[in-house]
Structures are given as structure tokens and as C-alpha cells.
Image (cartoon, rainbow, N blue to C red; front, side, top):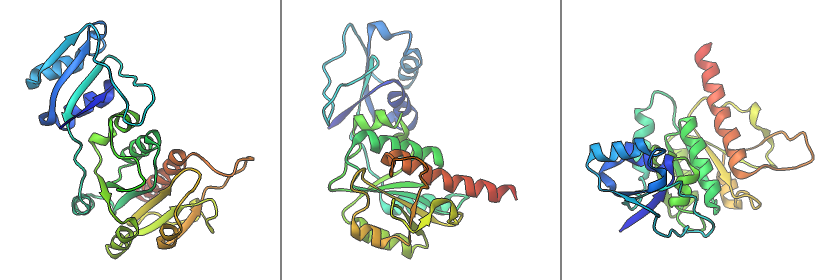
Length: 250
């Protein structure tokens, strides 16, 4: 069964990352110039292309308005990675293992933003639970600006069990928590590491927090006590990047 993705960047990245899974593309007549690159690439790849006066009605999986930017693509259902594929990715990488675990992120915009940050930071995989979590949909792909096409995303039945497996593989797990005893910038994140981010409002579930090796907080200087989950996740991810870059320059 085909899924629908929309927006310039998600469609373009799908053509780049998995062209064989794109079944057809529909472009609105008044957006032809804007989507010339998509049109040319689809024609080179032999992907069916339709030009319409109006795009077919679209419904967002989680409700809300669909901002399609004049282009939609019908693609094969998103294929989640396995944990073994993520392990293979970090074993082939030149840097230590680096993964992101998300605990009950139910907002698709937050999930998309976190996947986008994860891809930009160079993680080898993102791990989400199958239950009480947003899944990768067109809304998530749009929010990720197409990053879902370039980073491995795995869905697991038991996040805590997966965390224990990761620790057995040599990763240290750092949970983002306002009540954390450690300050993020005091941790050594240069080795194999998994960053664990919880849902906005509830944070990490108790068992997930207990399974982390460290709970760390972002030092807050203003009156607010917490940040949006996607913002906090990005700060943790890029602190790993900063420390590893600093080590390379020594």
C-alpha cells in the first residue's frame, strides 16, 4: 500500500534516497517552475508524473493542515530499520557509536524535528517505541525536511530492553532530564553513546530513566524550567558533535 508524502524537500529526498519506491508524483500546474528539479529528476528516472490544475485532497494522518507546496509523491510504505542494521551502521562508521532514543514522542512535528537534528548530527540510528509514539508519516517526513530518507529509524516493542542491549554493545546511555544530577556540558560524550529524550511535559518514564547510565540537564538561566523536546534533544546531540570535533582538533 502506497503512502503519500508532500512538500518540496521530502519529495526531492525520496527521489534521491529511494527512487525505486516512488510510484508516481503529482505537481500542480502553477508550481511547475518551482518544482523543475523534481520534474526533471522524475523524468530521468522514468517515474510517472502528473501535472494537474489542482492537487487531490490530502488529509494529514494526525489532523491539521496539509502544506503540500504544490507537489505530492506516492511511495512505498516507510520501511523501518532493524537494530542489527543500526549496529552495522555504527560498526562501519569512522566515529564511535551514536544513536538517539525517543521515549513516547507523540507529536509528529517534534518527532520530525528530532530526526532532522539526528541526521544533521550524524547519528547512526534513531530508535522509537511501537506504542505511545508517533510513527514515521508524511507529516513527520515534512517536519524532518526529508531527513527520514537518510537516517535509520527502528521501532521496538520494549525500549528498556533495547537500552539494556545497547549497553551490552558498549554504549553509555545519557537521558535528558531537568532533574538530572549532571550538567550536560560536564559529561564526556566522546565514546559510544546513546542520547535518550522523553516526551514534552512528562519527560522520561521511570523505568527508562532508571535504565540510563546518567541523567543530565541543560543549565537554564531564565525563568522557564524546561525546553521543547526537539530543542533539548538537539542541544544534547550537538554537544556530542562539539566534543568529538574538539578531540579531532587536538
